[in-house]
Image (cartoon, rainbow, N blue to C red):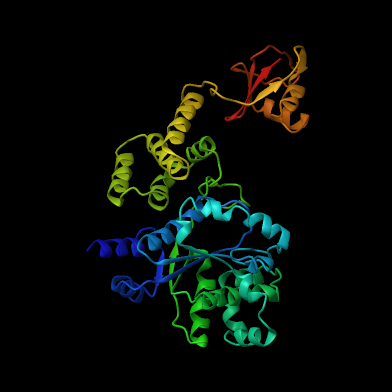
Length: 396
C-alpha cells in the first residue's frame, strides 16, 4: 500500500505529462527496478531551484530503489540545445564546459544520494560515433518531422536562420537513452520534443521505448519568464542562506502555492490550506517566510534558516542594519558621496553612484540622501546602505 502511494505521488505531484502513464504505473507497481535518466547541458556553473523541480522527482525514484542516472551533456553542449531559443545557442568550448561542470556533483548532492547515482557524460559515446552510425541514426527522422517543432516554425516565420546542426540535437539526446538503456527519462516541458526522440530511436536498437515524465517549468523571481541564469531571475543552490532567503521573499504572491508544491515536502493538503488561508485574508508575507525557511533548510541547515529569517526581519521589517556586514577601511576626512560609494565598492562607477543616489537608494547612518553632490564627513562605524541588501561599515 505504501509503495502504491509513493508511486502515485511520483506520477501526479508536480507532473505535467506522463508518456505512457499506464505502462509506467504498471512497471512501478510491479517492483521492477528502472533506469531513470535526467540530462542537463552544462551551460552555466550554477544549478538553481528551477533545476531542483526535476531533480526532486528523480530523488523520488531513487528513494524507491530505482537507478538514478544524472547525465551531463558535455558533448551536446558543444552544439547547443535550440529549445525555446529565437536564435542559435552559442556553442561552448571544452574549457567552458569543464569549468561549468566542476561543481555539479556537489550541487546535485544537495538533493540526490550520490553514492547511488550513475553520473555520466555523453561524450563517452558521441565522441566515438562514426559517420556511418550517425547517418543510420539520422535516417530515423524526416526533415518534415523536425520542422513541425513549434520553435522552428516560429524561427522560420520570423525569417530567422535555422541551422542544420540544430536539427541534429534531438537525435543526439535521443541516442543518449540508447547508450544508457534508459527505462524512463525526466525533463521539463520544454524538453518534450527532445525526449520523444529517444522513444523513436530505442526500438531501432532493439530496446523498448522509454517512458517519459515531464514537470512544469518554474517561473523565476519576476513571476513571468522561466527561472534562467540568462534572465537573472534565479535562486541558485550555491546562494548563501541569507541571499536565498531574501530572494525567495521577493517572489510574487501568486507563486507561493506553486513553489510550495514543486520545491518543498509540504503535503498537498497543507498547501491547499495555505491557499485557502490567503483567500481568507492571511498575509502572504508570512507564508512566503515559511516557504523561504523551508527551502533554506533543505539546502543549508535549520540553524542557517533561522538566522536568515532573523536577519531579514531585522533589515526589512525593523529597518535595522544586519549584525554582520562588509567592512571598508577609509581614512577620516571628507568624501564626495559618489566617490565614497565607489571607494566602498557599493557602485562600480560615479555614474552608477549618481543614478542610485538620485533614485533614493542610498542612506548614510539610516538617513536617505538624494543629493549626489553632497560631501560626507567620514566617522568610524558609519554605515552606508545601497538598495535593500548592500551594507558597508566604514572603519578607520
